[in-house]
Image (spheres, rainbow, N blue to C red):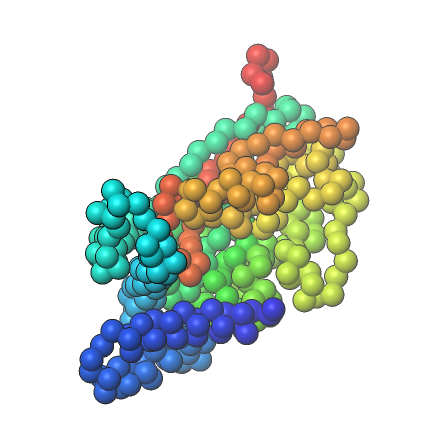
Length: 380
């Protein structure tokens, strides 16, 4: 299902469920009916935000209102769903509880209150963690013939620029990146939360990125939502070069940026052959492969020194991370991979922003500072 109908279905069904709960539990039906337009408008929040005049006061007000409403609505939805599931379980198990267990069976109302209390605490912490940006540092020794001087890369993925993440948080991320004095800045896709996002203020923030050898990016699946052309135009307007299945020599470094499958599908392109592309690189320069998803592309291992990817957010809730490892075959963080062609390193970041669910639990946002250094005797 394409982005527009899928997202429309998600927002409208969730707001419809909330509105149904309001109708069931309020005695003032006229007030509930009067609130129906609000539920419809907020159910279409991402689209209405994108249609408002870019950077206008009304767009900023609507974004602030939605940033408060959307997580609150999601929290209420989870609590009401939990209450309804509990009530359904009580109904299905009526008369089946042993006599000694009856006192342990809470009422549906008490169950809802307990869920609200525990959930509110987790949600508050999750919002705090989602905005508590970390700086992770790595030093990667490479063969002396591959790198002859220290080279600092700063890698950030999954900015998810939009009204939920907010321009102030984006500015903080840009300041944190610039503070690392990078030689190269790499953005690993999902720069926009969807193709309708990206305001003038967001553009001004990204234009402040500074690196000695330049700022480069690939597009991710969210950048393709609604058409990748908008994301490409936005990123270009920020002075950032997008690499689309292309290799770029940068003197002491060679970059290879790979399109996300969602972007490639929109372009009608064929699967990329990393080994064939890598064959044309300068022999002495380390090859850094930048691709949004953390898959190891077929036949690629051994043809690059380091792959940088995002996409998974580390699960965004840490308990989900094992499911992502199973899905992609690669863990969050640094891992080493081998093939008959040689060894390659892969770093999968938890990313900077978030999408739809504005919390993180056990998967804090990060920018990654990677110092490539020449290996010396005795150092692995």
